[in-house]
Image 1 (cartoon, rainbow, N blue to C red):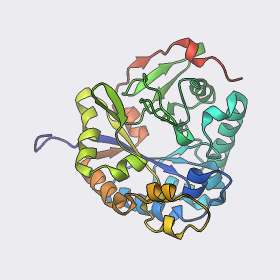
Image 2: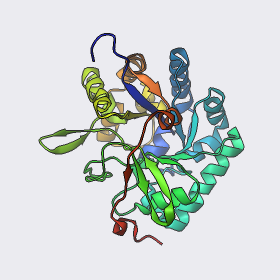
Image 3: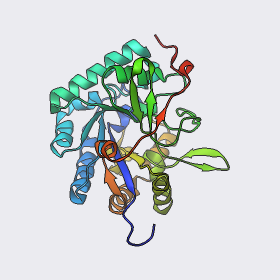
Length: 295
C-alpha cells in the first residue's frame, strides 16, 4: 500500500482453549496456563483501541469463567468454539445441536451474551458435513468461521470460495461464512496464516498475504490461540508426547507475541461484528447434495 493510504482491515479472532486439551485430546485436563496468554492478547487489543472476536471453548469457560468474563467486559465479541474440543463432523446432527446449545447456555450464563458466531474445533466442517451450517442457522447463529478453503490432510474444502459469502440454505435460512485465509501457488491453494501457519511464516510474508484481500473489497480473517504466547509450556509438559509433536508445537512460539503486536499495528483490526456492519457480502448457494447425510 502507498504511504498515506488507510491500513488494510483484518478480522482478528482468537480460539480460547487449553493447549493439551485441544491438541493432544479432550480427555486431557484443562489447565489455567492459557489465561496468561489471553490476558496478553486482551492487553494488546486494549492498547490499540481495537476489538476482536473470541471463540471460547465451553469446557474451558465452565472451568475458568473469568476468561469469558474478561472477554465480555472488554467489549469483544463472545463467540462459541463448541463445548468439548472435538470436530463438528464427528458428532452428527443431533449431538452437534446438543453441544451447540450447551456451549451457548454456558457462555450466556457467564457473560449474559448469547453467542451468534461459531468456529468448529479443528476447523471440523468439511465437504461431507456442510449440514453443520444448517444446524447453526436453525439455532440462530449468524456467522460461521470454520472452513479452510484448501485441500488439507485433516480439514479443508478445496472448492469453497476464498472470500466471505452469505450461504443460502434450505428453508429460506442463510449464514455468513468467513473462511480462513489461503493463497495460491501454480493453481494450488495453501493455508496462509493463523495458528501454526503464523508461527512459522516470516512476518513480511504474512503481512503481504493478509493485505491481499483488500484489493478484492473484503477483509481477511486471522486466528490465534492464547497458548501460542506461552514459550515454556511444551518443555514444562510432563506427560507422554512424541518428539515430533513437541517440536511442531513449540516451533515459532517465541516470536508469536511480536508478530501479533506488529499485526495489530500494521492492520485495522476489527471484530466480526464490525466486519458485518462494514462490508457487503455476496451470496453463495452450494450444491444441495452437499448438505445431505448425518442424521
